[in-house]
Length: 152
Image 1 (tube, rainbow, N blue to C red):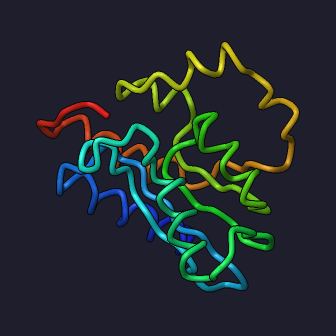
Image 2 (cartoon, helix red, strand yellow):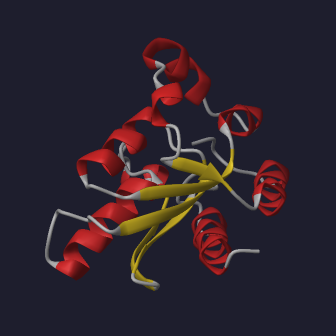
């Protein structure tokens, strides 16, 4: 398994164990070093925008002292929703690696497919996003499904 995806999974597990939100953990890497990390904190913060990717982008910006994350790669447990995908583009993230795909996100109760139907456009991003370590992320999602939790 990719070491950065493993850390994203750990980040997600931390969040779901604490009841912060869904099983979405993210790390941002620059030059082989982690410069940002975050997990879904929608429930904890009562903030619909506090997805793992957004939390990690905010963390990386604070740590690096810039909003421009050019040269950074993002590893996340679930394929980014449109909000997070656009946030990655605004931050100049160079590449996204994700574990579970949009259909997997839907299997655990998230509605990314609805927004994909409305906004589409992923076909224009060839090479920007790559699926890796899906099976390990599926295990995370299965564990989340087995837990008693508020869905988000």
